[in-house]
Length: 510
Ligand code: BG6
Image (cartoon, rainbow, N blue to C red):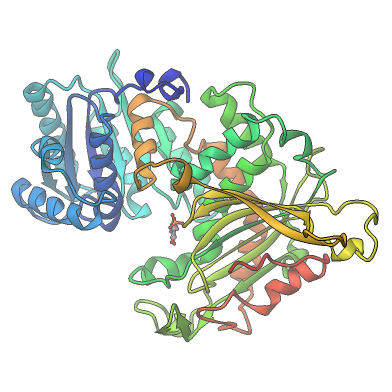
């Protein structure tokens, strides 16, 4: 959002800078499921650069022709558009090449450099390169080093070299810092784009517009009016084929310091002084730093972990986590995590932020629910203040995107009696936007050098710092009661207790 490219009029929107994109991990899941469909959507929206080429880089031997055929056929399976228009895709596909190599082999990077120079010559790209690290995190540091050694990270005048780094960024505060140091020896911060795909989601970006583009919400967006905030990211999927990674990560690492805290920071940040990328990131970083990490001795009270046992999800039997492929049959890894956090600043002091996330849950839903305080006194005969349902504002992020506000209304009739109604705004009903992967905006932003929606090093650190005591305690102490929730349920009973103690309850999501 650094310039006018995103201002209201479509006439101002400009294409990404001419460039070559190199995807490391080009034969992986992320590339075929999300990156290629996003590139297609950008081409369709005329946001892909006029001159654009793509090199797939992976360790599987394959020719460019067969790679191109493979991703073209996969695109028809994974595209968010109902039909792939061959006229649009062929223009992209003709400039796709493939190279195989070991990420540790300097010769493979010299070869890559030659390919890039050749493409620049052939199609007239000016030497701007976007490197996308869609590999296992163990290769992040190595690839950046190899790119640097091959002379591919130094930016010649008026040319850019940018690196998008997927999550997970480290596995705790220390390793994240070490990775930042490692890549920081080869890249300037302005060249590093740490991705959190939640920031590519339309409703998440809309949070800033909702809060700061309207006059009526900000005055009540504070501890005086807000009782508590709940952030839910529940998934019905289990770990599927990712057991190898997931069993070493767990729900807390996988979702909280990144996606969940992104949602929290967008909800709780102060208004930035402008939409300039550093102004926005400064405010997000500030609120992340204001999160009070629970004390180690309070972890048992403020955090709950769970692991699913066998059950039924969406009418189908689901095996227990410990029986999933590549998962240790005695695994101590959590597939559910809930935490109660506080933000130590004037706006949010003492307002609990409850976060929960889990796999194999009852419903696929991501949302932020803001519960406001009850009216202060009893005014309606026969209606106790306690029985009145407080106002609730819900930002629905997935799968249905929208915003709803619950308030009390008089049920028609001579007797004054109160009912609750919901005012619902649904994206799909108001805007007829085409379905997207969420990666479109992020790729386009990177091609324009806009870092607003990417994580700065200090934000990554702050995310890890906020949950570090929980990671430590859970790492040190085995969970005695795993598995403690049935697949297809809303998680362990202890998570309900976490809120009951404060006189609150998780929102029932139908
Ligand atoms: C990823 C996690 O970052 O986010 C996955 O590694 C998780 O475990 C996914 O399933 C959730 O993303 P989304 O967009 O489907 O909510």
